[in-house]
Structures are given as structure tokens and as C-alpha cells.
Amino acid sequence: MPIRHPSSVAHVSLLERAPWKRYVVAAVFVAYYACSFRMWQETAGQPYEWALEEQKRMVKEKAEAVKEKGLAFTSGQQDPKDAELKIDEESLPSPYLPGAFACAFIFLNILVHALFHLMCVWSIAFRSMFLFQPTDKIQSGSFVRVTPHANKGKADICPVEESEVTLRCQFTFQYQNFEFIEAGEKDPDLVGDEDWSGVRQIQCPTNLKWSEYQNWKGLVTDAQIEKAQDKFGTNVFDL
Image (tube, rainbow, N blue to C red; front, side, top):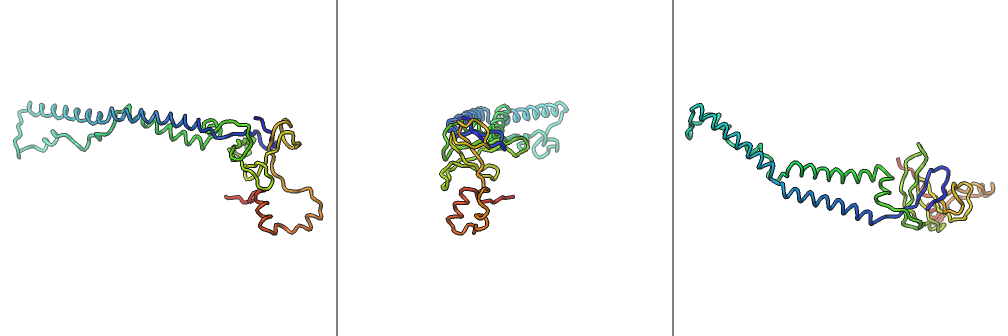
């Protein structure tokens, strides 16, 4: 659904969570991990067996070479070189290690899984594609994807909440509060067709009479403070 927006941002779109997309992504990773576990079961111990057979072959060749030289070993009279005719257990791989292809497949699955989560952090477009879907419902619990102009900050997906003061749906982007307006409601500062719903930045009252500013006593009661915080935000910027 197209949405009118201020000229200060490039594009605004309305989103909602897409649980079915999450289930599809989860099913794909579960299938990959199941295949990885199966391959690990089928190939576990292969590198150990190959390394063991190779050491046995080398020991046999060394023993035959010793016999050809006419040397004989008896118990307690072995030359130090005889130690080379024993299997080096410490150099053998773990008997639980799977085959090379299975290791590569398991590593690839873990890498893709990690990259998926990182891409959801690095790319707003990627996150919206795989975790959200477009909607035309403006309500508390939905989300707004806001894309600023180039070199004006980065895009973000903002949760929509309902104001207790204005009863309008609103959201916060780049530490500024925005509110939704209904289709047909005029606002010359917005870009787009007037028949579309829109979002606008909540403005402070700047067109009151001079006497009202002179006589203003500030926010006196807790209720006034709560209403102002709900409408304009807390005005806190964390570095």
C-alpha cells in the first residue's frame, strides 16, 4: 500500500511479521542440519581408519626394510629405532571425526546460518524480505520500513504503537516521532496522492499567539509530562 511521507525521507512502506517465512527458513535449516548429522553418522571414524591403515602400512614397510638389513630384535635388546615401528596413537585423528566432505558440509551449514542472522542485522532489505511481508493495516503491532535519502542516515524497520494522547498510530525513526494520518486528510508537506494514508513528523506548536508563550508555565503536573512524553518522546539522545 503506498503511503504519503515527508520529503525528508525517500520511501515509507507498511509491514507486518510473516511467521510462515520464519517457518520456511527454520525448516530449511533443520533439513540441512539433519543431512549434516546423517553424514556425520555415516562417515564418523573414516579419517581415523585411513590414518591407522596408513601408519600400519608404513610400520610394515619399515619392518621389512629392517629384515632386509639382517637385523633382529629381541625383547630388552631393541635399538632405539625400534620405536619407529610402533603406531603413533597421538598423531591419529579422533575416531568421532567425520569424513572431509561431511566436515565441509557441516561447516558450510554453520557458516550460512551465521550469515543469515548477520544479514538480518546488516541489511534492512534482507530482513524485510525474509521476516516480514507487506500489509495495508495500520495498527499497533505492525511495522514501518523507512528509507531516508542518500547520506541522511540508514534505513530502519520501526514498530508501530498507538498514542494514548492522540489515539493515532505512531512510530519513532532517527529519534523523531511520526504519526499516521488517514486518507483524504490534507497535509501540504507530504509527498504522494491525497487519497493515500500518510505519515508526518509530529511538530511542536510553533504558531500560537505570543502571549501564550509568555504566559506558559511549563509542564506542571505529572499528567502533562506523561502526555508530552507520549506525543513528542522523551527527548533523550544516547551516545
